[in-house]
Image (cartoon, rainbow, N blue to C red; front, top):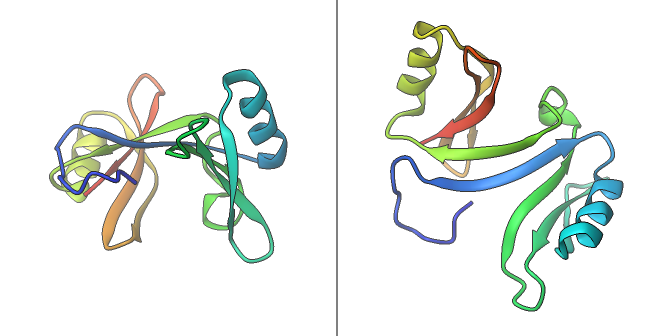
Length: 126
Protein backbone atom coordinates (compact mmCIF):
# COMPACT_ATOMS: atom_id res chain seq x y z
CA UNK A 1 0.00 0.00 0.00
CA UNK A 2 0.95 3.64 0.15
CA UNK A 3 4.44 4.45 1.41
CA UNK A 4 2.98 7.66 2.86
CA UNK A 5 2.06 6.92 6.47
CA UNK A 6 -0.65 9.58 6.58
CA UNK A 7 -4.09 8.11 6.05
CA UNK A 8 -6.11 10.39 3.80
CA UNK A 9 -9.77 9.43 3.60
CA UNK A 10 -10.81 9.13 -0.04
CA UNK A 11 -7.25 8.72 -1.34
CA UNK A 12 -6.42 6.03 -3.89
CA UNK A 13 -3.59 4.23 -2.13
CA UNK A 14 -2.98 1.22 -4.36
CA UNK A 15 -3.91 -0.35 -7.67
CA UNK A 16 -3.43 -3.84 -8.95
CA UNK A 17 -4.53 -6.30 -11.55
CA UNK A 18 -5.53 -9.84 -10.58
CA UNK A 19 -5.75 -12.26 -13.49
CA UNK A 20 -5.16 -15.89 -14.34
CA UNK A 21 -1.87 -15.36 -16.20
CA UNK A 22 0.05 -12.74 -14.23
CA UNK A 23 3.37 -13.75 -15.83
CA UNK A 24 2.09 -12.74 -19.27
CA UNK A 25 0.43 -9.57 -17.98
CA UNK A 26 3.57 -8.30 -16.23
CA UNK A 27 5.50 -8.75 -19.49
CA UNK A 28 2.74 -6.95 -21.43
CA UNK A 29 2.75 -3.94 -19.09
CA UNK A 30 6.55 -3.86 -18.96
CA UNK A 31 6.58 -3.53 -22.76
CA UNK A 32 3.56 -1.24 -23.17
CA UNK A 33 4.13 1.27 -20.34
CA UNK A 34 7.75 0.64 -19.36
CA UNK A 35 7.22 -0.69 -15.84
CA UNK A 36 9.86 -2.97 -14.39
CA UNK A 37 8.56 -6.18 -12.78
CA UNK A 38 9.83 -7.30 -9.38
CA UNK A 39 8.75 -10.78 -8.24
CA UNK A 40 7.00 -11.14 -4.89
CA UNK A 41 7.13 -14.72 -3.64
CA UNK A 42 3.87 -16.24 -2.47
CA UNK A 43 5.37 -19.66 -1.84
CA UNK A 44 4.86 -21.77 -4.93
CA UNK A 45 4.42 -18.83 -7.33
CA UNK A 46 5.25 -15.14 -7.72
CA UNK A 47 3.04 -12.10 -7.99
CA UNK A 48 4.72 -8.89 -9.16
CA UNK A 49 5.32 -5.36 -8.00
CA UNK A 50 5.40 -3.11 -11.03
CA UNK A 51 8.00 -0.40 -10.56
CA UNK A 52 8.74 2.89 -12.27
CA UNK A 53 11.77 2.63 -14.52
CA UNK A 54 14.96 3.95 -13.01
CA UNK A 55 13.64 4.80 -9.54
CA UNK A 56 12.36 1.35 -8.58
CA UNK A 57 9.30 2.99 -6.95
CA UNK A 58 6.45 0.49 -6.81
CA UNK A 59 3.44 1.90 -8.65
CA UNK A 60 1.10 -1.13 -8.95
CA UNK A 61 0.82 -4.88 -8.61
CA UNK A 62 0.06 -7.73 -10.99
CA UNK A 63 -1.31 -10.77 -9.17
CA UNK A 64 -2.43 -14.28 -10.00
CA UNK A 65 -6.12 -15.09 -9.53
CA UNK A 66 -5.40 -17.86 -7.02
CA UNK A 67 -6.29 -18.66 -3.44
CA UNK A 68 -8.13 -15.79 -1.78
CA UNK A 69 -7.85 -13.80 -5.03
CA UNK A 70 -9.53 -16.45 -7.20
CA UNK A 71 -12.82 -14.52 -7.40
CA UNK A 72 -11.36 -11.10 -8.15
CA UNK A 73 -12.59 -9.56 -11.40
CA UNK A 74 -9.94 -9.31 -14.15
CA UNK A 75 -9.58 -5.54 -14.14
CA UNK A 76 -7.37 -2.85 -12.71
CA UNK A 77 -8.55 -2.45 -9.12
CA UNK A 78 -8.24 0.78 -7.15
CA UNK A 79 -7.95 0.64 -3.36
CA UNK A 80 -9.51 3.65 -1.65
CA UNK A 81 -8.93 4.61 1.98
CA UNK A 82 -12.19 5.08 3.92
CA UNK A 83 -12.89 6.01 7.54
CA UNK A 84 -14.61 2.68 8.27
CA UNK A 85 -14.58 -0.18 5.77
CA UNK A 86 -17.47 -1.98 7.47
CA UNK A 87 -19.64 1.14 7.33
CA UNK A 88 -18.72 1.67 3.66
CA UNK A 89 -19.66 -1.93 2.90
CA UNK A 90 -23.02 -1.48 4.64
CA UNK A 91 -23.64 1.74 2.68
CA UNK A 92 -22.78 -0.11 -0.54
CA UNK A 93 -25.57 -2.62 0.04
CA UNK A 94 -28.01 0.02 1.27
CA UNK A 95 -27.45 2.05 -1.90
CA UNK A 96 -28.02 -0.89 -4.27
CA UNK A 97 -24.47 -2.17 -4.66
CA UNK A 98 -23.04 -5.48 -3.53
CA UNK A 99 -20.10 -6.92 -1.67
CA UNK A 100 -17.96 -9.11 -3.95
CA UNK A 101 -15.42 -10.08 -1.30
CA UNK A 102 -14.69 -9.32 2.32
CA UNK A 103 -14.17 -8.55 4.91
CA UNK A 104 -10.52 -9.44 4.61
CA UNK A 105 -7.81 -8.37 7.00
CA UNK A 106 -4.26 -7.70 5.86
CA UNK A 107 -1.63 -5.71 7.69
CA UNK A 108 -4.13 -4.82 10.40
CA UNK A 109 -6.53 -3.22 7.93
CA UNK A 110 -9.97 -4.35 6.78
CA UNK A 111 -10.83 -4.63 3.07
CA UNK A 112 -14.05 -5.07 1.08
CA UNK A 113 -14.33 -5.41 -2.69
CA UNK A 114 -17.56 -3.70 -3.68
CA UNK A 115 -19.58 -3.37 -6.88
CA UNK A 116 -21.61 -0.21 -7.36
CA UNK A 117 -25.15 -0.28 -8.86
CA UNK A 118 -23.70 0.39 -12.34
CA UNK A 119 -21.36 -2.62 -12.08
CA UNK A 120 -18.04 -0.84 -11.41
CA UNK A 121 -15.74 -2.52 -8.87
CA UNK A 122 -13.59 -0.89 -6.18
CA UNK A 123 -11.83 -1.94 -2.97
CA UNK A 124 -12.44 0.10 0.18
CA UNK A 125 -10.24 -0.33 3.23
CA UNK A 126 -9.59 1.16 6.64
